[in-house]
Amino acid sequence: MDLLLHAEDIHASYEHRRILKGVALSLGRGEILGLIGTNGAGKTTLMGVLAGSHQHETGLMTLAGEKYAPEGIEEAQACGVGLIPQNFTIDPQLTIASAIFRGTFQADKPHGELRDQASELIREIGVSLDPDARIGSLIRAEQALVEVLRMVAEEAQLVIMDEVAASLPDHDVAVLHQVLRMLVSQGRAIIYITHRLDEVRSIAHRIAVLREGRVHKILEASRTNVEELAFLLLQHELESSSRPSDAPDGDELLRVVGLGMEDKVRDVTFNVAKGEIFGLVGTHRSGVYELVEALAGVRPGTSGNIFIHGQEVTVRTVQDARRLKIGYLSDAVEDPSGTGTIVEGLQLSPDEGEPNLRDEITQLRGVADVIRRMRISTTNIHGNISTLSGGDRQKVQLARWMATDCDVLILSHPSRGIDIGAKEAVYRMLNELSQTGVGIILLSSDLSELISWCHRVGVMRDGELVTIEANANTNEDVLIHHMLGVKFESGGSDARRVRT
Image (cartoon, rainbow, N blue to C red; front, side, top):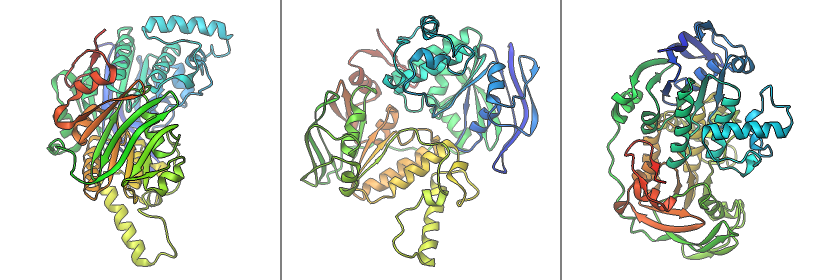
């Protein structure tokens, strides 16, 4: 192996808390190294050390045989190391060409020159993008490809990707994987972080398991399976659970009739029973996001009717939805700095009047229980939310919404960025919530999650609800067929490929 990166005994801290406790790993040119670990294991801190945004205290790193200790992101880029963070943001007004070359020495060139160079890069990588298109017009998967092209423009030899595919549907992940394989065929190396264990097996050559600030084990991807990886992460076997059966026999909670939103959503009709977990899936341009935003009052529908408990209601604003006890957890990128303390973020109900000691103790016990159940990694529940990992911040948001007094709870990609152990906890909590009669609408691009959690799954395509599949009668391949409207080849647990 032509060694590109070697790290030995890396120690690093964050906010006076030791995060990395002697990390050792190596990576060769032309290799994809998968990196997995529970939330709080130290993945983001390690990537920060490699990418120059975080300084390590002790340990040695070499890059291409030379000592490597970048004091900033610019120095790391100059050495050929680039990072695509999980919640990357790009100015929506930039063209694709400008976005690709932003931050490089070529950024100030005339746009015509950048367009020509971007067109050449796009042809070289083999994707379909218009260099003059605005970033704001792109779906998330296309923006991810732009970030990969930025790595090529920066001439990065080591590309670090932190949960970039967390909320992408399988067919978009497959396109991304195809591009990554092309990059490593050119001699580049990639560190690929993901919580989707089937995905990391399909893309990586080797998989490093990070646990409590150390690399616990490195495995050949072709010689392991999801069950072994999960055991190494959690130190116990995954709980076996049966797929949901028929939808609950409870009374109808929500009915949507002929809902439309301009040209994005047309004539959508469905219902949700009390205690039902109803899944929704579709590509980013299918209208599925506009549908849930209409139900949540983010962007009101332009036609159709909504009924709650059999009574027609008007949902024009988020305030209307909250008044009707409709809750909505969006998958929009949050401010990574966070605000307030962890306790405040997990408040189970708003303060009413002066709290007494008994209420405060009860509240703190409830917060501690949520932290334990959702495996939030912290040593101080009064610490700022910004001290948590990205996945743990997502858990805080999710737990807060699940504790609200809602009749209908709409969750968009609730497991985005959280580890497999926390997914188990989320599933148990959703089940407990549904058993109280709450109706849950779950939007997710993780098809195995929809099959595992939902009683029924509705599929959006081209602005229409093309089918509603009972859990017992469907599988991931059927859902993909309805999403894309084309035949495909199943890859089992590996990334799927659309048949052209």
